[in-house]
Image 1 (cartoon, helix red, strand yellow):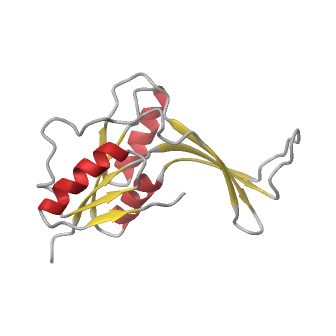
Image 2 (cartoon, helix red, strand yellow):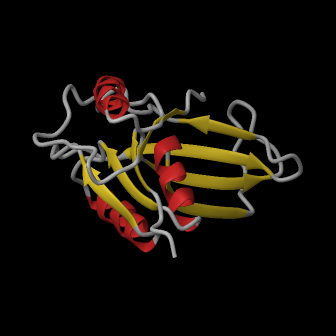
Length: 165
């Protein structure tokens, strides 16, 4: 059997609160959700979990911070067999995304601050791509994504960019 590919994912990690609703509320309206899900999210995080589920080996670098909710996210990543390097040792709450998914259409409305307050200026000391064969970046950690991409390209490893929303 061939060894599974190893990919490093760099980008956004969030604590997602997802609500299934009949419709998105209007201003000053309160509604009751039919279902609620608490999970980790973010483009790089979701990609790392999916890649692991498809038998790849995933490592995720993201700025989570140190907070009571951080341990919930780390436990979930462990459950999905995603190795995680927290780029922040600051006592910050994780980035929280509130998501409402319309039951009949699957359309969503998202409120989040993304990673704009948790930007890392440099890669961790001793950073190496030696344990990976590819790099995935989502653009939420701009400077370290550029630096890691340069290292990956020098090794002729593929660099995947998710430039979504």
